[in-house]
Amino acid sequence: MKSSSWDSSIGDLPAAFLDRLPDILQPEDLDIYAEHVAAERPLTIRITDASLELSEVEATFASRGMTCHRSDWMPESLRITPPDRSLLKEIDGVLGNRIFRQSLSSMAAVESMGIHPGHDVLDCCAAPGGKSSLIRLRQGSDGILVANDLSRNRVSRMRRLFELINVTGVDTQVHDAKTLGSVFPTCFDRVLLDAPCSGEGRFNLNEPATWTDWNPGKIRRLAKLQVSLLKSAIQTLRPGGRLIYATCTLAPEENECVLQKVLTRHSSMVRIESISTPFEGRRQALSGWNEVSFPDWMSNAVRIVPENGMTPFFLAAIRRL
Ligand SMILES: C[S@@+](CC[C@H](N)C(=O)[O-])C[C@H]1O[C@@H](n2cnc3c(N)ncnc32)[C@H](O)[C@@H]1O
Image (cartoon, rainbow, N blue to C red; front, side, top):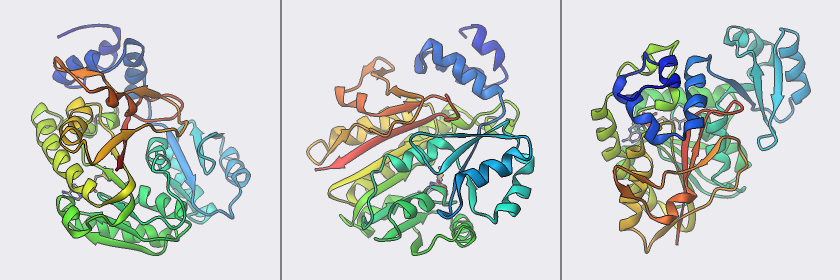
């Protein structure tokens, strides 16, 4: 195993995981990641009710000794420091459930979809519904939104969330997303595939449950599933439609390698395009992995490193021709 200053600070994480990191992250990003994993997770919220002023939310947090930081690219969001979650319930009560805890990278995934009012949208793996709720906002509640998930329990939870934060007009469905291509062929202008993944971007030293079940076999299993999900999701796009493939993991097998497998076979049907949303922590996707070089188009995909309240993510925008 390689050894350096960053891995001594996060040395409790699985050795096989740490061993891969220098091949995935640039040297300066290793330190950024190590610091992120050892610290408390960033606390970011989104205001779900347009009539609630940012300044009112800022004053509510300030009265409890917390500071709110605005974002240039995501006007409804605030990053709260220190990231003290213990007061959130009380603040929710004061503000009447009009704020919603959501990571900035999740918001970036939805903003990257380029949704306009009237677009018909499919969220393939939607539960518990955070991203779908933002999609509905960007649709201006105009156009179809199908929010699908495999898990009936999680879909019930999603429906409760929509009721709580007053999101209406969402068609919640329960399908294996591998079948969505035949259930909804060429039906949508925008599609989100926020794929089940090994969640390496959510690892936190203070929460061992986030990393104790990590193993290379899990990555292999998930990568196979992600390839099937992406193939199916592409089939649901209308010509000209755009799909965002998203994960919250670092593993190239679940990110660049999935794109390479699916897009190389469908090159006459789809292409990868750039993502212009100006969120922080953007890095280019890897140019190769395990001695294999990726095609030039891979540089349009984006890795997010945990800077300025962002959390690790991978995003790729796919246009159906
Ligand atoms: C990363 S989470 C989605 C989070 C969600 N997009 C949000 O923002 O709240 C992945 C979801 O994929 C669902 N899932 C796993 N396998 C699936 C499949 N074969 N078809 C559809 N959904 C699946 C899981 O139940 C889980 O809810």
